[in-house]
Amino acid sequence: MKIDVYALPNSVQEKELKERIAVVVDVLRASSTIITALHNGCREVIPLIDIEEAINLSKNYEKGTFLLGGERNAQKIEGFDLSNSPYEYTRDVVEGRTVLITTTNGTRAIRKANEAKEVIIGGFLNAAAVARYIGQKEENVAFICAGTDGKFSLDDILAVGAMIDALQNTGKPLDMDDLGLVCLQMYSIHKQDLKEILKHTYHYKNLVKAGFEADVDYCIQLNLLPTIPVYREGVIRVLNIV
Ligand code: MLT
Image 1 (cartoon, rainbow, N blue to C red):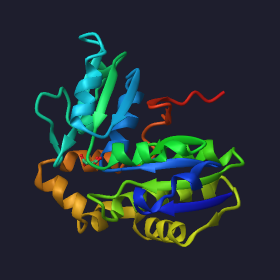
Image 2: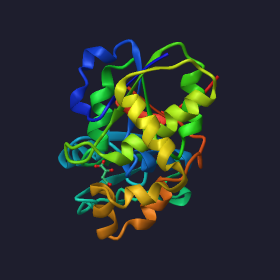
Image 3: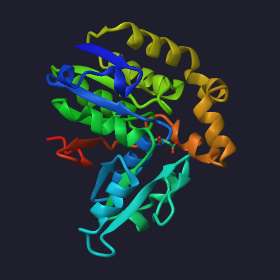
Image 4: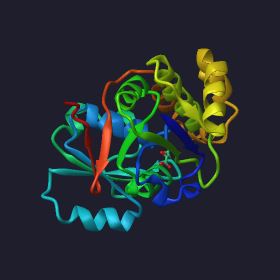
């Protein structure tokens, strides 16, 4: 299995994805929030680029059947129901509902992966589940990191490292590109104390400054959830493995 890692969505040529499985990673926090929402029974998540796009689309839904979620500058968007904190996406809030979500980096990265053969959402929370799923396939894999504000973000790299590590543990022979090797090495060095390295990073510091340290602690938990979100035709749902 060939593994390529893209540090930013803009490094990917859409046509390169056609024959590959894309795993989109925005570990702080969009991926982790989407995994959590679907795990808690949310019907579907629709990733949107603009606030306006989300508000316009919400007009097609009946009151009570949908929630508007997301962030700008890490904060809840005015008039929205939920922010981008995974802790808000509890079962009593999201079960049976559609979440229309727009975030600064994560939802853009998901949309960018649109051309891939299959698009799944990964993070620390579901690393083992993602590895098990892609490990049984014969497809090549592209990990697409969302980055932060157009810049490389170490949190995503470490999460990709966790998924590659779990893939290696399945015994699958892997042919990684150089960034894949970096992800695996960084994860192997820091896996015992991810926070120790993350606390020096830009996105972590921003989230902590904004009062979201508990979210970071949540998002960096390894293999907490078995849920794999899959993005098809504009909608993210739970992958049903048959
Ligand atoms: C994003 O998608 O830009 C991030 O998830 C931002 C955040 O941490 O809320």
